[in-house]
Length: 396
Image (cartoon, rainbow, N blue to C red; front, side, top):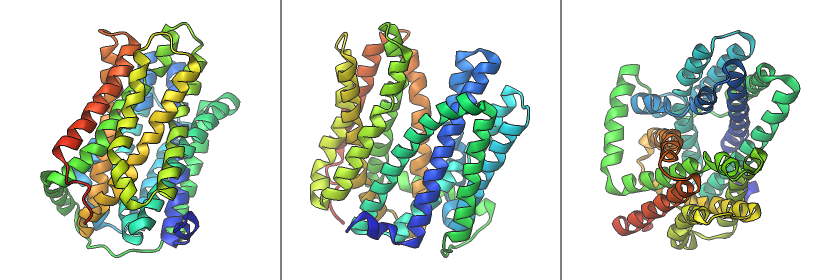
């Protein structure tokens, strides 16, 4: 099985391309909005809020409407989600909105994100299985990391050359292309259909049912906690170098190390490691996510060593390939959309909260120790997962 054979599936190919475009557009918009808000207000706090404003509102969309991913045709739902992103981006770029209204608009639109992610996850789980599914998720991870790197680099260049407003216009156009691609090229899949009220009822009941299952709950938490800890640590990389008296640009460059490691890990584990070996590597890889961050507790680490630690931590995220395959196999087929929506909702919520918690801890502890503490908490979560869910990765 190769990446080429996975990309031969027309549904997967469309989702792979459109999702990569959308992630690039999201990254570009987030950076441009943060720069614009800081330029207008001079407030570091508001700039940080603008950077993370799209995370927490996803909790509302995923909790109340997660079942929509199973009730509406994926082609229409995904295209609509990207279309809404296009419309909001157009407003941000062309209308002279007050800062509070811009932030409110981004927060409101982000509530659709879990539904789109749920629909995408459902389609991929339906059209791919076994090793094909693992390779498909591996490609998604590779593309996501690459899109974030390109988006970050492109955002800096676009804002410098075009200005923040025009950079957001570029982001809107990318979302429009993604929406049109899905609407015109993604094959239709059958759905059960239902009303909005039915979707809300099914969402609440479905979330309770998924989280009540001990194995599924363990798989979900295993995909929420380590990334949340790492996000908290990442949010302190720039302040860490600033406190050390090093150029702030150093921290910005090192933020790219984690995605590079994620690309390496996804490629190695997804392409070259078999199913049984992936299961055996699950706990070691999960441990690798947090353990290198503990090294930041050592005073005066050379910049190269800091970068190497972040790259190694990024490779550990390949543990998700084993967990995602097991998750896909355990979730009932008619609840896959909601399950992936719940997964996305919790992940985004945790990643939205962790930087705030990590930042609050810097009022008590030195920045380096907080980064190390984030890594230690991630390792502790892995130990708990290993002790309390020994049967989780048993093959179906």
